[in-house]
Image (cartoon, rainbow, N blue to C red; front, side, top):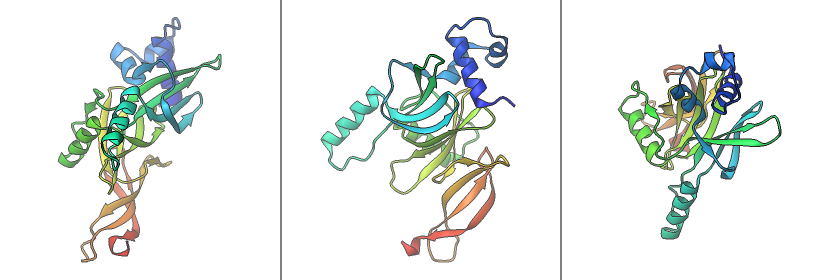
Length: 229
């Protein structure tokens, strides 16, 4: 199983033209694979950069592209109560000489491939995120292929847990919730999943553990009830 650090660093080396690398060639066999891993280059660090996850010389950041900043500024100027902010997901690689290389992985209008296993609700959420992307949390998977994301839906009521396949640029909304923590057994811990227990007390929230494709395999007891809010 290829670790994310090796996978991404190797692909960066190939595209950057760092010479013949047999390991790199075995990982990235096509230009499509390289593009999927790398996203788009940035001339400088993003504005409002916030570190989300770090692994060796690689790190994931939330930040704003120039387009994000212009959109957010225009929204605030037109409406003091504007909340439909957007940002982007960036990859930073620290080179051996101490300098940084930045690439934008996901942003509003990204040409990611929508996963064909999503149901209608998940597909609708993914479409909304493509129109106005905002990432709150992101982390590297242990399999070296996926990123786990928590994205803001701009509804003020819930976030969604998503995965992004860096090989083929496949984006998938998995479930609603506020965390995406990969556990040692390979499940993903999602906190504060909203549900309706059917006891006439309205909505409730609990923690669930899902498989990487979104199937719930374990549930905690209720952590919060809507009637208590």
